[in-house]
Amino acid sequence: MHLLVRWLLAPLARLLYRPQVEGADRIPHTGPVIIASNHRAAVDTAVVALTAGRPVSFLGKAEYFVGGSLKGRALASFLTALGYVPVDRTNAKAGLAALHAARTVLDAGGAFAIYPEGTRSLDGRLHRGHTGVATLALGTGAPVVPVALIGTERVQPVGARFPRLHRVTVRYGEPLDFSRYDGLESSSMIRRAVTDEIMDAISMLSEQVYVDQYHQRPAA
Image (cartoon, rainbow, N blue to C red; front, side):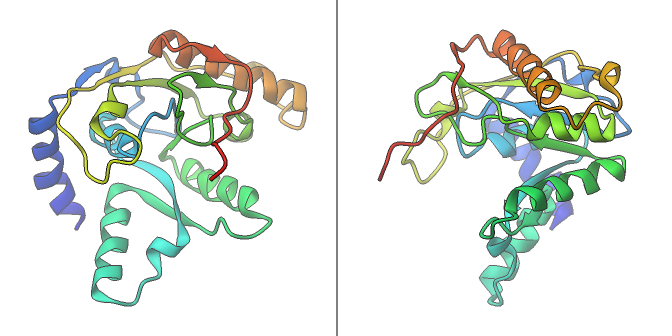
């Protein structure tokens, strides 16, 4: 499945969508790195995976990986090939489990992608980031590459089941180094400062209006 994604599906997607990629060479080719992106659509994960230039891991719901049917096994294999790491988000310790899974990837020298907003923006604005990205950066020493995804909300608008053809732009920024805060990862003020710096970099790249409040999905 990994070879199918790499040699068939990935080139086909690039041919169909012709993403305009800026600054991909700023992502270190080796060693741990955190890719921090804005989040506009369900296809964002695929866009990052196809343009980063190296394998990237993402968090995925554990229930997607446990199906016993042929369809379930195929889905699990496909998600694994895309770089998803299963995490159980149904219990009270889901946040800790997510951080542990991400840190495992980084400690092994891998690339890990995260959406600091926590969920995709439904109003087009960039919202306040959660401090998990800072916890990872400070705890592992990995540099953070900010990313702006532009136009993915037109590829798969809210409520659309299938992607549409629309060109997207992916802008990778300069890596952010937070080694000046070594030993201070337990400070909530430092974690907030690091997160805000990352969100500011994403805002500059995406040119979105920044809102200093967490994104709240409308009640069902």
